[in-house]
Length: 434
Image (cartoon, rainbow, N blue to C red):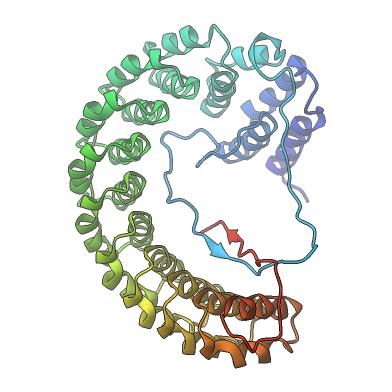
């Protein structure tokens, strides 16, 4: 028997999906969806709200659903995929906004304005996001009025809307709201300030790193990363010692965004943090900064108990491109996890050090075709004649992708006796996701 929340979710998402993307939004249609959401529990509301958000073109967000605070995460890890060469199709998906999306022409905006002060937090915050993105002329005043309301829930929604508007007029009200008596409002104000990305907010956000509430400190750290000012590195260094792992994770993410060399020594101790997500974030940040001083610490993490951390360390070593990491990456070619082995081969090819040839030749016999493809690509990058015979043998591999990669690699190696020539460079695609 299907439970009521599931029925509600299916109904709400179905209604949200019925309308053609290029058609004017139907206010009554959207009102029906929002009415359903008002009667749902918070989980069902957020899931259905995501469908509504997607239909209104909320894309590329670290967290699409409105929350009391953002959940900042490191940029997704690049992961190599099998190369595809020749005339195989490449599919692109394009999302088109209809002509009625912005401004007053979006007839459905009235339904969202009507619920801005609704008792249901999920519903009014969905409305704030939609109206903020629509940039409708009267939205700024409406959100500002909410931010000044005695009700803390409405003030939180006002802060959310002002951040979504991306309007510099909202900077001062949001900065003032960082001192609100309600922690959820302060956190949302920090989020809004971060969305606007103005350096004039650095002082207020640095002060917020000392807030009594961990969610506020976390969001302030995330916001400083959005602004990307090197002068906040010392303050974020202090946040790396925060007792909350969420705050530490946001701080390492922010330092990775700023990409300042002075952050390396601050981040290195976080590679030994007891929280795996903090280690992951610190690893990714060091990969973004690309300092050879991080190689030793990152090399130790190729044996971390967390597969995500191991892969992040391998990716970071590939980004840094220092020959001293070859031994650690060669060991990772024997990891039990296929993606880890594939990524290790990619990293060794990125570094292009001749000491990696023998380990990569061994990887040409890996049981997984994707690993063999990455190994062949890496050997082509290194261009060592010692790889000629193993690559010629790989021309008879059972996998067509491996054969293609071996042909390309052979063409890269400067040897007059080779008799295999191709002129199409295989593309190592980068797979996103942690």
